[in-house]
Length: 238
Image (cartoon, rainbow, N blue to C red; front, side):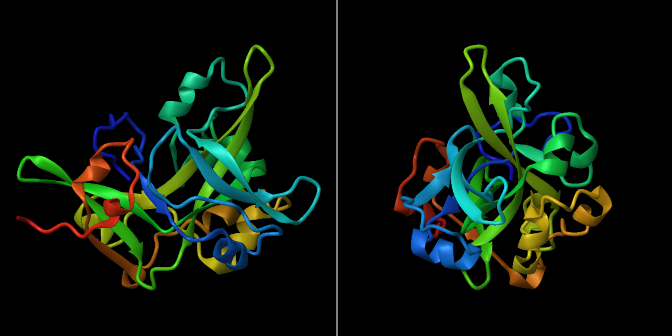
């Protein structure tokens, strides 16, 4: 996910925006949540904003939804500014990187979404494209989360989205894409007893091309603060 107006950092997949419109009751059913979350639809979720994540309740096997800041702040960080540079983690190497390896082993989560945006340069401008599953149902990115305390003792919980090689559909505009987990793998990804990086990496595959659809979207998406339903409007050349 390469957001318009975002800086591409060396060695980092800079994630742009994603969408979560599914009603709380439907999310609870699809992801087997203990409680129905109260969520407003979001059409242009941007880095550093609060995002919905699903994780196991500590000490239990119950899935709960929480709101975390998008951009992981490792527990050992000196300040929170590092989070703006850690909005993505490469699935191939996250288990080995100092910023992510502890979270990869102990603090994994699902990040529900209805779609995500990618950008393609066309005629001198960046045109957003919306990527969704072919059945238009919500899915889950593979995520990691961490907890950090500032000098005053305030706790901040934050998350990052794992990325992998793009499938054939997404590759037409970008070489990377978020890891979209298969529903049959949700349990394993959240399982606190599963800590073997080799086994976990087997879950981090590219989403099937035949289950992926992509189309141009409203250029208003380029503005991170713009979050209205018309972000989803199909864009056609005038």
